[in-house]
Length: 190
Image (cartoon, rainbow, N blue to C red; front, top):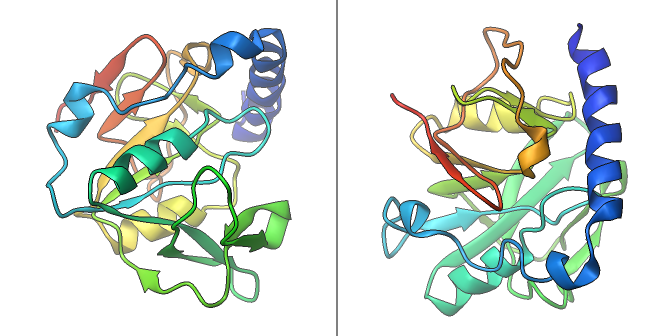
């Protein structure tokens, strides 16, 4: 199966799973980073998260948690002109008052938000495996950012149904250090 075929299959699977998830349960999931994640994050670390699109594991409660615990929080800012991604400070995770529309219909920090470089990056995905393989949307934004910042702790947020046996990886694909699902934390051996 090609990456393109796998992306199509995983988008459909994720969409179906989320559609069947009761609202009362959805509000409780991903409400606080689990202890194994917190143990790997320095008290002064800047945390890069994302504003979830339809079907993605929600990250706004993690953002709120980190802000309340003294961390600086940032979200991706896509630069349409060259396919690059930077992170910019995010201060209102539950309200989103500091966000504006960006490329690909994503919500991102406004133009006045300060650029920052996260120490930890929490990212969405379409599929993952136990070896830290991550299948993203296919734009390469996160892989390019991670390659330029190899010391950042890379964490994926996912639904359990997104786990597959093996993610096809290419030389430029960056593996995750951890994956968090509603039922488990996968820690990848170095």
